[in-house]
Image (tube, rainbow, N blue to C red; front, side):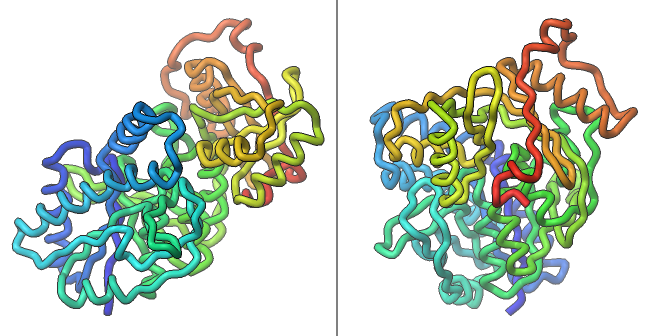
Length: 388
C-alpha cells in the first residue's frame, strides 16, 4: 500500500477556517492521483503554550505524566477538526491519536523516546479510508499511558510513520517553505537553502533553528526518509528545502529562551553534562566572567527537570538569548541579555557570512551595547556528542 505522508504544523492552523483549506489541499492531492494519505497534525498555533499555562496555574508542581496528557489534547482537537473538514469534502477519513498510532515509548514523560512501533492500526485505517489523520508528538508507554515526544515533535511522528509504512519521503508544511540560513522573520537577508544534509539541519535544530525537530531529522537519516519542506499558501504549495545526504550550509540560529546553568565548579558542570548527554540533551560547556556553566538551547524544559531531579542546589538557572554561528567545523555562541541586541548580533553575523544580504537593522547599537555580551568559541572538542 502506497501512502503519502504530510505533516502540518501549528502555523498551518491559525484559524478554524484553515482546516478547510488543508482539507481542500488533501482532496486535490487525491484527485491528482495520490493513493492514500496520512496527515500528521500539530495543535493550533499557541494552543500548547496556553494548555501548559493553565496546568501550571492549577499546580506548579504538576506531574509530568499529567502534563503530557493535558498537552496532547491540543493535537487531538486539531485531528478532530481536520477530520470534520475532510469529511465535508465527501472523502472517507478517520483520525488516530497517541493511543492507537502504534508508537510505543519509554516513560520519560515530557520528552519520551521511541522504543517500538507497530504499523497495523494505521494500515487497517488506510484500508478503510483514503485519508488517515494522526496526532503529532504523542504515543503510549508500555503501561498504555499517553506520552509526549517533546515540544515541536510532530515532525518526528510524521517521519516515524513514514518509516513504519516503508515510505521513503515525508512532506513537512510550515509557515516558511524551507530551511534558511537564518530566521527569515528576523534576518531579512536570510537565504533559502534548496538542499541540506541531515547532519547539518539536525545540528541547526539543536542550536535554535525551529523549522525541523532534530530527532525527526536523525530518525529520517537512520531510516533513509527524505524530508521535503514546504508551505501551503493561498496561491498553492511552495516547495523549499529537501533534506537528504550530506550537503552543508553555514547558518545563524537564535534561541530566545536558552537556559544557562551556572555551576559551582568544573567538576559539577562536567557531572551535569554527562547526565544530560545520557538523556540525549545537547549541553554546551561555557566559561566566561560568570564562571563555569552549561548552555541548553533545545529540550529546555526536559533538561531542567533532569537537573532538578539530580538534586544539586548549587546550580542556578538564567534565561538568555543565544545566537549561534554554525559551519562545518566549529560553532560560536553569543549569549545576550537583551533580545533586540541578539537580533542585531544575528544580522551582523549573517551579513559577514553572506555579504550584501543585510536588511534594515532592528535598532542602532552603541559601542557600549556591542561590548555587553558573552562570546563563547566552541570547537570540535567542546561540541555536544550528538551535534555532529
